[in-house]
Image 1: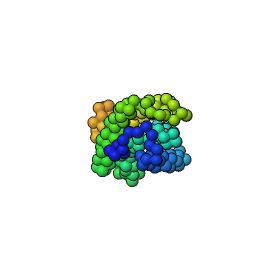
Image 2: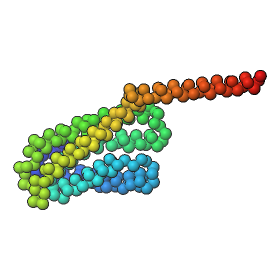
Image 3: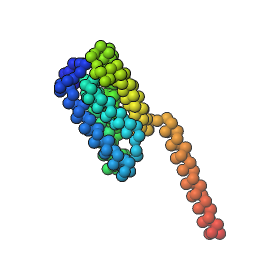
Image 4: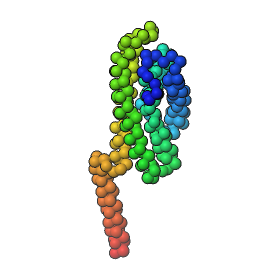
Length: 216
């Protein structure tokens, strides 16, 4: 869409609408998958921001498709999902007990890089494209939405970017911890290891004293 479509006020029956409709089906199914796996079965920790993300995206994309507004931007933002296969593979490696494998580390690093370019870098670029068409203010907007439509899109951009920025910070921290680069993580682990070693030495000395007393 980004390469072969032009920014239009409305998509009509253009093929540009197709990716958004397909994604709506995907995110609907994924939402109920999360309900079953996370809430009902308890196989994973409930990720509240992810639930909020799914409800928000489904609502905004549905409004866009119904009123034929923002279709181009919604479809191009699906570039964000280029990072999804890596998170899926990460879960697979986690539940097959391969979190300590080199493959897990490599996949995680690639995931962070792709996440940055396809989300953290691309969302502001997409917003700039929206700005370049005056936020749709000069378009013949649907009467039911009026000027509220562009404002909803601006709010959507801000909300999605902040949510992804929060996830990206967590990803970077997790990657740094996995690679042993986190200063705080190192300082926390070292005292615990040292305390554990001291405790083992004290137990050993106490055991030796008991044995020597018994021998006497």
